[in-house]
Image 1 (cartoon, one colour):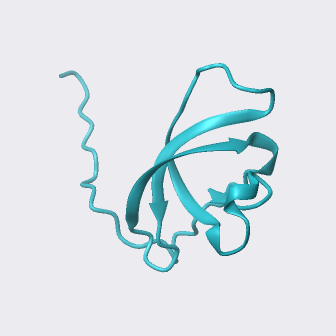
Image 2 (tube, rainbow, N blue to C red):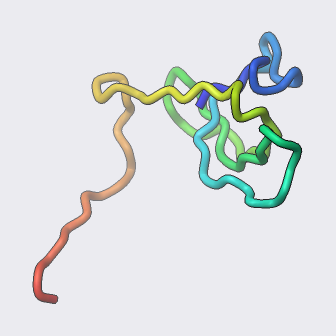
Length: 85
């Protein structure tokens, strides 16, 4: 998710960041705002840089999905599903 000035003035200009969201806080906030927890991402490599909590306007969030060809390999083994365990 791209977090920039549209989501909050604190992320204007070169302070914009890519955030891989891990959770959304359910605490009450001002209407249209939300606390997000996740990891700031290096857009060139897709690797996590630091854990972050940010307070942003929902209307200003920019969801971006990576395409398969540009996504770096993940360190996750495929899930094996068995029937009748």
